[in-house]
Length: 111
Length: 113
Image (cartoon, rainbow over all chains, first blue to last red; front, side, top):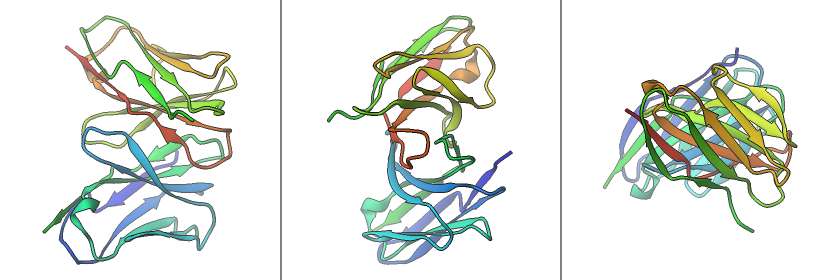
């Protein structure tokens, strides 16, 4: 059974600071996804990581994947208030788009 | 090109009742997956439909059932509602089984009293 764990569960940070969210998964996964969810809203796709060593960047967010360590990271650079949201990672067991999600990291960026 | 839509947006039911939630997939997408997201938790995979056939199922009891129609829209049916079924129900569509990103709809928030 594929299990996905994120940490931290809650992160409060000041604007301008850097931080990393960690996502561990228990068995070999075909793909790793990162999503953003604003309160009361649906999930917005951020990144899809397809192979070991994959790195993707969009604005102040950068995601990476280490399949040997079964670890993905989401790095936040110079945080701004607009990044406040809950971030989920999800792993896919057997290519087929059936995702197992982590519990989420609630990020609060303070001015 | 329209995105994924779901109806209704909110719903209140009582224990023991039955509910049907609907999802219209994004244009050109033939795969629909349903997820349940309890408050403060990550989404949990319920099941997936590919070209009108159930393609996979998560750890949910048989009272959770679904359909996919020829136009690839989908329904989620839940019988004998329980209090713990209160959650946000999300559907997601993709253009196949191994194509990467799924696109999520806005969700239906179900409250069971």
